[in-house]
Length: 349
Image (tube, rainbow, N blue to C red; front, side, top):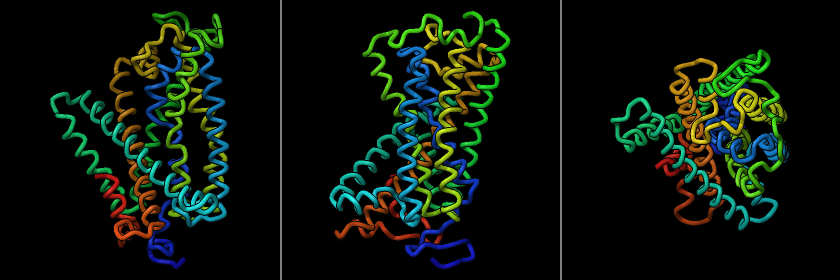
């Protein structure tokens, strides 16, 4: 690689502009998605306290996955996606299949996030058509990705900050309420609520199994930090910290949040159709809870869509780089600012 005035530049023209603070916050933000803010309520009502076990087990397997991806990227930090390793070790055909499958998954989930964003915006502006909001948000986030990878990093830094502050605020508020036996309209807050009438399958095995996809969705996006390796300054120093601390993020942001929610709100009384965060803050006396959490979820969905665009662009760029056809190689060009602009634009629109 050669040095430039904007930082190190890879052989393919992409630039290493993401700093340690960018990567660490991308790792934190990637761990926290709308699945936690919105889907946790449904998971809790389906499984009761055993949801803690589900989050712990699935979270542990995600941690092992991150360790495996991290080991390969640490050895070859110039790779943009883990698809390159599939092609290398399992063959080009497997890499081609996995690459296209993963890219399509990102596109479909991105569409779902875009739809969700328009719903959250219309919470305040119900008279604006959803399609106008969707086009505007997509144009803004696509521009963020097209301008420079550093701008993407800055956007993710602040998106992640909002999510982290919201979860920590909820956990701290919940601990205070639980330790003081705070009286609420649904009873007294306390950790005894978690084990009150405990059963491993309180609503049957079917509901327990039905909660698994929701928890998987909640962890979706955790792997995005690995995709930043090729555009990170000093990846051998930054990547291990981001990967190894994944387990602590799972314990704090997922399991910690779930425990606090059930300590404050008896899980049998939880409304599955409403964010558990809204319900907790409402019990604490925050009248604007719905508006505050709607803002947090809006930023969370925007962060997810921003990351999906980044990841989809890099995966499509990887597919184009490995293709021998006549059309796909046209998408492996890199702009002057060091981003695979054509691949990003195609993935976005």
